[in-house]
Length: 127
Figure (cartoon, rainbow, N blue to C red):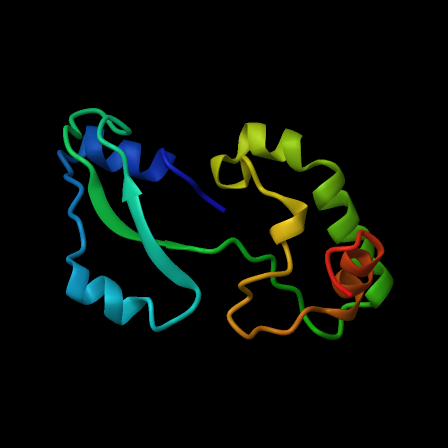
């Protein structure tokens, strides 16, 4: 997971005289055909020397596990994630503001592991 500002981007902008380059609407629309991607604007001032908004794409956060991972382990992993999401968000920008209610939506057609599904059903996120 990464969110803005991202340390790798900070580093390249400061040490290699990098520059953020936006993506035009035509290409964003093409990329958004993949439901994992959506339009995103990096606000001006997010990075040193970035004086304008930069339009780009973002990817939804996913935690992908092997389907053969035992249900109880995935359940425990999912539970631990959500019980500690505020603390995780303090360290990982992309997790800041994550909402349990949205956790099982917009999965781009990817299946939920039965262990995660059980947790989300218990929490009323899924029926």
